[in-house]
Length: 139
Image 1 (cartoon, rainbow, N blue to C red):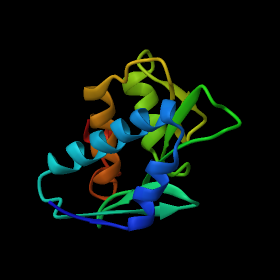
Image 2: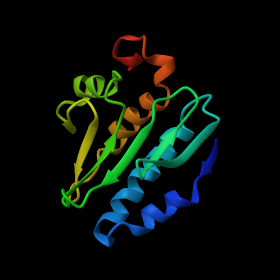
Image 3: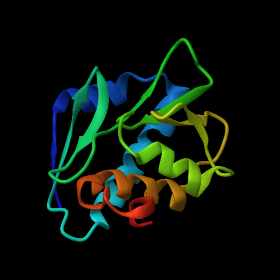
Image 4: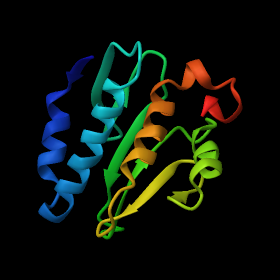
């Protein structure tokens, strides 16, 4: 998989407070791992959208992540709210994740991320335009 990174994205990670940086870097690592496991995914773009680290693929829906000062004890991974992604994640992982509407999976800073389940969600997002017609996105 070819990763193209906007250098300003790395600056955003470096500027997160110390208590948050490792959690945000872990989310980034999970996105990169998930992308590398998707058959046929050749290019992943790491850039900024709305000032937030974002990941784009040719056949996928944008995956964003961020931590906000106004909610300092949590951080989140965002998905396009008009897609079927978060509604599908809610059906698959209602007892695993905390959701914010149809747009985000929210994590507490002091909790361990359910890695396999989150990577599954990321893979569905990165292949969204190939699977959006399937029941439960082919999950």
